[in-house]
Each structure stands twice: as structure tokens, then as C-alpha cells.
Length: 349
Image (cartoon, rainbow, N blue to C red; front, top):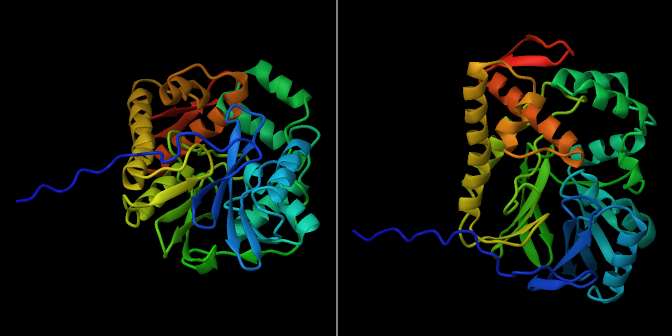
């Protein structure tokens, strides 16, 4: 018998990202660019696909003066002054859709995205809060947030989507799962994922090896899977694992993934297995510990993350901890069993 070839593993054809305001051609007519973010994950990738009527820009970065200035350099430099015909947002998070409205307003582009992404982005951009709502505070308390932190959050202005998202257009073009597209001289199939963002778009080329992955297909890091006060009973971890399984059936070693963060990579089958196992192993750790004693979501930080969670990461850690508890409940493996003295919900396996 002939042994099956060993998988090549995860590789990065380009070891460094393009400098700010410059681009790298990753395939014929496809440019990779990088934009800064003012947070621990300090960048987001953007791509531009060349067509006869102009460029299709995939994801945009935040709406800030700095990002706009970088885009002006890119438009006059690597994009050679050609028009931007379309902006394709892989999902509704501000680092991916923040300047979509600016491209529509200033450059006459058309916005392409999923219906859920457009609805969520429009809703969140219009929902400006000067103080946290009672529902938000109650959600944080039930997750186990301490009283000092609750008081601080109640007194300060929360972060609002509108702070970094240009007003979005009234009209857009809807993309949906299974749809065929023609962009950048290639045929593509739209495949949607769930968990990190609802109806998250990925594009799989029918003509060559390219896959536009957004935050659904990342190397080296796992995207945040969070539960929020808007849908406290959601199960994004379960949705994520289902998406990984669906995409694993399509993934091949030959695929070159263009992700929303970090570096383009090959080895997608292995990476999808890693992304799924990352959360399966977290659920196993959590179930074992909750069988010994009940905990709040915040009380699960050490089990899920294995490191100290600072102020800058606390919010994302909280919503991800709630997500993993909801996943165990959906599997029938853990349930709320009461509250602690501060009103935090205690969970037991």
C-alpha cells in the first residue's frame, strides 16, 4: 500500500505584511493591504480585486482620520487612481465595515454584504448610548462582574459602534450562502459562517486556490465568540463548530486563505480542525471544573484563557465565557443553579 501524503501544515507564503500605505499582490489582480487598529489586535487586513469597472475593496478598517489618510495613499498609489466600484464587507464588525459608508459617499461605490451584516451594522451604528442601559448592567452582573467594575461602567460612556463607523447607506446588495459571484476576473462561491458574526461571508474561488476568509478563517488566533445582552441565550460556540464542520468538507491543502487578520496562509484543513478543537477542549475543561464546584462566567476565566485578563480584554473575555456556558447548556451538560451574593449566576455541570 502507498502511504497517504502528509498534510503540509499551516504555512505563510509572505512572512511579513505590506508596509502601511502599500500593497502586496497575492494573486493576479488581487492586492493585500493592512490598516491599523487602536487595540491589542492592532491591524485588520483589506483586499482589492481588479475588474474592468474598477476595484472591489474587501473590508475597510475603522472610520478614523488616520485610516482615511492611509486609504487616500492606497487609492492614489497601489490602486492607481482607478475607481472603487464596490465595497464588500465580510461581516458587520466595525474594523471590517467602518469605512464602507465613506466609500459609498465619497467614491460612488456599492456596498455588498449579507443581509444580517447590513441590518446589524445599521442598527448598532444608530443605537448611540451615553450610559450603559439597565439591561447591559444586569447582564454583566449576572455574568459575575464585580461591584466596583459595575459601578465604573455604569458611570462612564460606553464604546459605541458609531464612534468608528461612517453612516451606512440606505441601500446595499445582498450576498447569500451558495451564491455565485464574478469578481477580480474569477468566479466565486459565497459560503456563510456563524459564531463570530451572524451570516459572516467567506468567498471561495472557482477559478484558482483563493479563499477570502474574513474573521471566520484566521491563522494563529481564534476569533471572539461572544454572547451579548441583545441575545443572552445565544449559542455562538455551537454555531461556530457547525460552521467549521461545513467548511472542513470544502477545504483543501491547496487553498490560499486571505484572512481578516494576521498573514495569508495555506493548510486550511488543519487550521479548521485546530479552530474546532480549541473550543471543544475549552468545553471539556469547563465541564470538568463545574462538576467539582459551581462558578459564574467571570469565575471561568482561568479555565478558558489560562492567563490574567486585563481591563482591555475583560469585556471580550466575559462574553466568551458566557458563550461557552451557553454551549454546555445547549448540550445538556451544565445548568444555572442559583446566584452568588452579588447576583452572579452560578453554573454547575
